[in-house]
Length: 261
Image 1 (cartoon, helix red, strand yellow):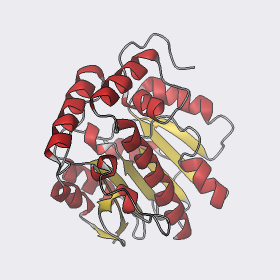
Image 2 (image 1 turned 90 degrees about the vertical axis):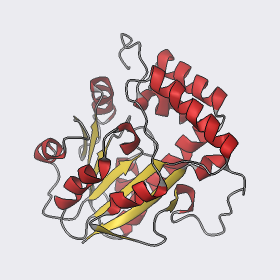
Image 3 (image 1 turned 30 degrees about the vertical axis):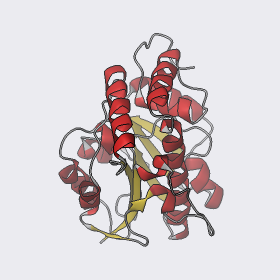
């Protein structure tokens, strides 16, 4: 169980609520509900994000990746990286990293019966520390680096930070990331801004929204694989997928995968 002493929501807890998980606390649910009242599609954005993660992991496994580093992982609940990857290739090694100590503790309880997966306490802004402690992974071999909706929680200029990660990866590794961006619809953009304000006032980790050009710059040092940086719902989407033309939840989440050169 998650510690009942926590009274301020965490990103992991809010995300877990949106995904109908079982590891959030009342403070997480309150923030998630408040955000959803302002922007009813907030939960759908979270689900689109998780769907991208699953598709990206499956695709990387098909390219031969057998080890993953998931930064800002949240709770490794059903359908997360280790279950997807090991379902296709047993023995695939996964290291999750999260900033919140309670999330890490609960994660390792959940992973007790998963010998090839662990969760480390670490700060996404300190890649050297993470690389030094992620000892189950062999960084001389290709790795699938996942920065899925974690960079919005880093307020600084994140392009140099991502480059520090990429420079430590072996050629043939992959970087998969998603990031929220601005919707072109003015009314939806106002609601999006209200959601961000509500979220930042109540959650330990604040959110920064970035433009498509800023997100594209995060792939410096990699070669984007088709279809490039697109709406996350469009990346490697199932055959015949046709999003609703007015799907604002889809419109605010970008996703892409880059191959490390």
